[in-house]
Amino acid sequence: MRIIIIIILVILALLINYKKEYFDLDRTIEPSNFIDDEDLSIKIDKKLIKKMYDMATFIKDNSEYEPSIYSNLPINYKNRNTYIQILYEMYVIDLLDKYIVNRFDSHKFIDVIYKYPSYDDINDKYPNDNIKKNYDKIFNDLLYPSINYFYKNVNLNLDEEFFKFTTNNINKKDLNEIKNLYEKTDSNNFHVFMKNTFNRYIIAVFKKLNIIHQNNCNITEMEPFTFTFKELTDENTNEIIELVDDIINNESNFF
Image (tube, rainbow, N blue to C red; front, side, top):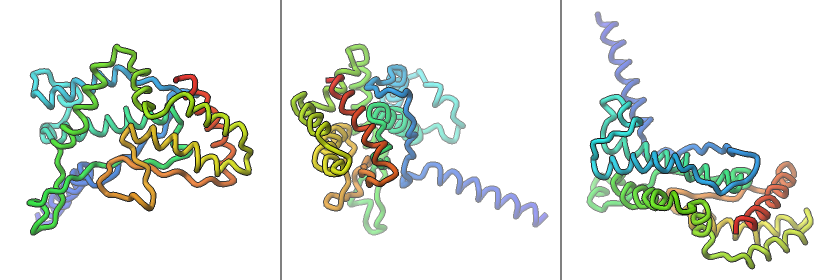
């Protein structure tokens, strides 16, 4: 009898730890790093936008229509925090990460980190020195406004309009200058071109996507999306040179 009780307690402990690990907000979100097609593209998945909008509307208005991704959850997970977490991961992996991979094949030359944002609350920090994880703030400040924007523009040349949004601080002349510099750059000076020219373009576009370039001067724990550039090596330089050529040509065509 004692052995059976011990076995039951061990199983319960494993289940509790599994649930705690799965819904731990401190963990990072693993990107997919998978490009849909061989050609770079600025297209956004319209069906995904509709799916996320239905999920966001259900969370916001507690509507009678329950999206299947929620209705199929075990009863213990049917709560607002879980709904927001699932939507957040879908937004990060299926929309944001997929977009930068399809447009830039970005994980070949950057390392990106996606994590859950934390919000400081003075009343929550003391005396226990805890950091509040505010699901509603994630939903209200990031998810709902972003998804609502995509949904409202889904039939209004969304791909082109969103591209314009990400490059509204850049013009065709700027990109032509980048292209001209690239064509004059040989492999021995490619690292200089990347650091002084191309990387600045990527930083500007990613900033519009709320993916912040992280360096020694601006390291912060409060940014949920950050990236760094991969170091150029003998093994990856040729591949990145070819990729940069494709990116510059495609960005020029999209303008």
